[in-house]
Amino acid sequence: MILGRVKPLDAILATAEKKSLHRSLGALQLTLFGVGCIIGTGIFVLTAAGAQKAGPGLMLAFVIAGLVCMVAALCYAEIASTIPVAGSAYTYSYATMGEFLAWTVGWALVLEYAIAASAVSVGWSGYFAGTILNEFMGIYLPQWLAAGPLALGGQPGGLINLPAAIIALLVTWLLMIGTSESAKVNAILVAIKVSALTVFIFLTVPQAEMARFNPFLPAGMFGGFGSGVGAVGAAATIFFAYVGFDAVSTAAEETKNPQRNVPIGLVGSLLICTIFYVLVAAGAIGTIGGQPIMGPNGIPFPAGSEELARQCALAAHSAKLVCSDEALAHVLREIGFSGIGNALGIAAFLALPSVILVLLFAQTRIFFVMSRDGLLPEFLSKVHPKWKTPHVVTAITGLVVATGAAFFPVGQLADIANAGTLYAFAMVAIAVMVLRKTDADRPRSFRTPMLWLVGPATVFGCAFLFLNLPAEAMMVLPIWTAIGIVIYFLYGYRKSHLGRGIIEVHEPEIHDIEPAIPGVDERDPLDPPRRPPES
Image (cartoon, rainbow, N blue to C red; front, side, top):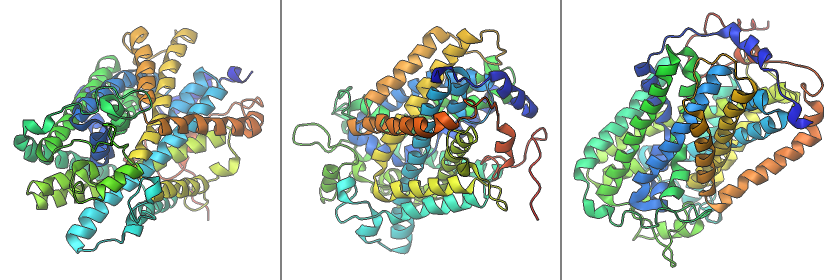
């Protein structure tokens, strides 16, 4: 039975014990760590798409998405502290619900990370073209090189988003040769992002005009399942702005008094980020307005659609928030702070490539673990003799990411990435509840409070947001999953190491390959040593 192939948890934990980490993080440190992980690309690149779906209701959308993240984070924290190994939701599912469901989760994570990296690449391209090229160099890329084709939601005259494709390929190359950002560089980039948003809030919120918030919900609270509009539809899109909170959950094994400090760190960081996001949305909408461009039936044109692209090409709409490729810098320029707007554009230009790197890193490691488990061909996990990186899977991933970035708009990409994310988070909540039943006596450094409520709330919240994605984005996940199931039964089911009676845990191998996890300067002294370079 495929549902009976469960990877032994004891084997996983025996390996994990070899790299147990020193518990040093307090509640404040964990909260600040969480703010740094969560505040990233979403707020810089999705403000315009969110406003097109909900108008001023974007502020409420951030609250809705934050609440779903909160319950999901509490589930993540328990299972991350119980099974502290690489592979994320894929490994958690393998150890609780069996190989088949683990495969679907891993396959969804592949979609999530790759498409999210494409979305960030497109967001970076907007700031690069608008701030670096236009504002500083006076260079205007021809339209056919600056955007994807109109039929895919690009812009009139668009053919390929060349800067987005180039940055995706450049980061892929850096990851292949083993370049990773250091902890110091990562801290500087986090400081740049948080400082940029803080300055934005202080310059815009005092100038906000209440009249610009009326009507507050031009598309309603709930636009209907599959519509992707309204405050809930916007929440399903800008959920992307919170992805990264799971990194806080995995820090549970490094936290002092985790039962107290992990909930404080998780809830505290999510609250701080939600307040940041709501104030940024209030500042942007209150200064230049954020009403969506309505279609003839009184419903907003879909974000990332051909119809919206045509409207934004008109002079009457071109300066609107919902039409900007670099929303926050655009707002500051519109209200007379061009220099600071350009500085914010530079901040995004500098910070977003590190997000692409982390997403590509995560995607290739998921592929690596699945290949090492025999569910994907072993050549995908081949490590380069000189660079010590999984170069084959990194190159394949980079080409897919660059292709998505070259031809699709950021709103569509974010929605597709969210579909995979929401499925994985729901499965993590189910895995926590299953493990409580099947292995109740297993030591847990953190236990989710009121799991009987928090677990089902996570599953419901993720399913509810998924059903409020645009229908096209919703359909991508079942189609992608169907393709994955075919691959599993044609290859993975027969080649699976566990199915053939081979129980392997590859944690040491993952920690042997380069680069180290982005944002980490030094290896833990308890980690296995790296392989010596070959002569």
